[in-house]
Length: 237
Image (cartoon, rainbow, N blue to C red):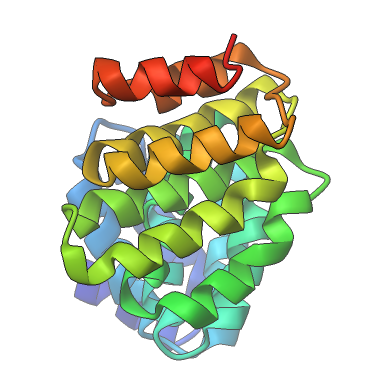
């Protein structure tokens, strides 16, 4: 089906492609398969892919966001900047937490794994974005990277760089964005507990306090009691 869908997009039969996909989006379809469909479509020239994605997005179906994210994941390999920009726009259009997480785990998250420094630069303005869901995606992307890292010692410098990257967001006040940020910190703490502990203590010693207690609660999830004690001694509530 992915090949047939991609072929319709390739010849400009965008409405026909939409009609073919509609029954799939109308039922429970595994995300893995929807991602494959999106990747197949994403192999086409960007202007044609855009027309297809712009037909699917207004439907705002959960499965549709997975297809869109799969297509952007494929396009990211050729033009990361463009894929990031389109990803951001779709996150804003979706305006819901699960779409945010779908995109974060398929576009910027894998981008950090595959091409760390350039992807971090592309993600940088998202930290101050006006849209809370875009800011949430930063935390989701960090979570994805940390999950894939498995705590490898050779990636310690990158884990440290991600914590430095997140410092401007330590005072994030929006609950939806904080949930994503806390998710990222929690997973970093699972795989790099010493780094996260030192980072949290450093923020608190500097007099910085999170605006949402949830941020610290999530960050402490996988830390040992000794590490938690040190963080509380530094001023954690």
